[in-house]
Image 1 (tube, helix red, strand yellow):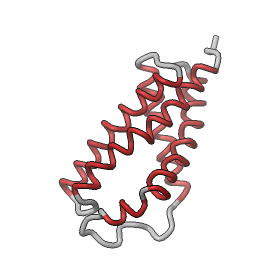
Image 2 (cartoon, helix red, strand yellow; image 1 turned 90 degrees about the vertical axis):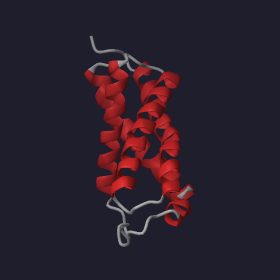
Image 3 (cartoon, one colour; image 1 turned 180 degrees about the vertical axis):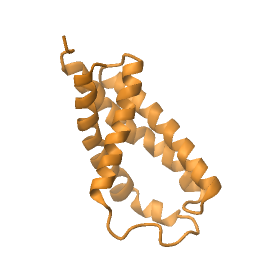
Length: 139
């Protein structure tokens, strides 16, 4: 993946991941996450810091773009596959490490979160892959 595609994918993918993440993790499954929190208290902010969440989403998109570039991947379906695998592997690692060393979630939430990330990052990867296919390579 050339620099133009990487930067465009990172920016557009980050925005998509931010909004899709809000839809999945707050709107659709917010009650599930609240019901499956661990014993730690006071860890959720009353109001999210939007710029920090958006910056994290841009970093997440950059990781997906990096893997897509390493695999020379473009296109909607291939992008979705890469995004889904990256999202699952990243979050299964993070969630189980956090489960092992903190009390922020129970085991149910720890198992479900990476599965939801397959959808979240899969959608982000699909958009990035589609964008990469539509943009002409830099000459």
